[in-house]
Length: 155
Ligand SMILES: CC(C)(COP(=O)(O)OP(=O)(O)OC[C@H]1O[C@@H](n2cnc3c(N)ncnc32)[C@H](O)[C@@H]1OP(=O)(O)O)[C@@H](O)C(=O)NCCC(=O)NCCS
Image: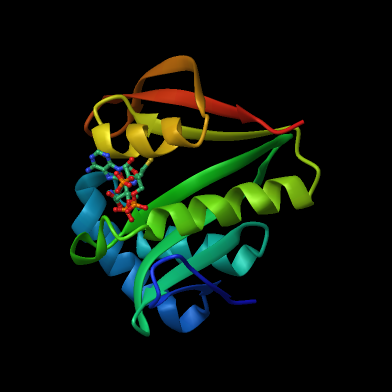
């Protein structure tokens, strides 16, 4: 299913297997040594338990996100926008979809983790009402960055 975004040229859609190479290249570019490997990406995608969503800008794939249940918690597992497409509201489009999906599935809360140093993502999540729950020391490897666990109550 596809939906239009606030940025007139923005559109959300499900990712397909043909997009995975692009996603793996963006992972390396954006997350460096903490990137999901091509095999992990493929395995998770084909497993079919997570929602893999992409956002296009002017007909070109510009970002992606992965979300779904991890145990009992509805979780944002990944979110990235290509550097050249940032600050056009694409992450907001994805966050709206993530929260709508959580509500649709009746999840009482939405969860995510973010590096405590990631100022932009923290500002994004706080603007959606996510609250700090706890810090997971050295969660992101191999860099050893701390993660902040955040929750948005939906019930
Ligand atoms: C964080 C990220 C997803 C934001 O994507 P984006 O499409 O540029 O975000 P949007 O344009 O939708 O911005 C929405 C809001 O988030 C906040 N925000 C986004 N980037 C920001 C930055 N660099 N500094 C401060 N606030 C920022 C702002 O409140 C912004 O609203 P505004 O533009 O009206 O001020 C993007 O910068 C990214 O992919 N970063 C690298 C990967 C990453 O950190 N992913 C998150 C892992 S937890």
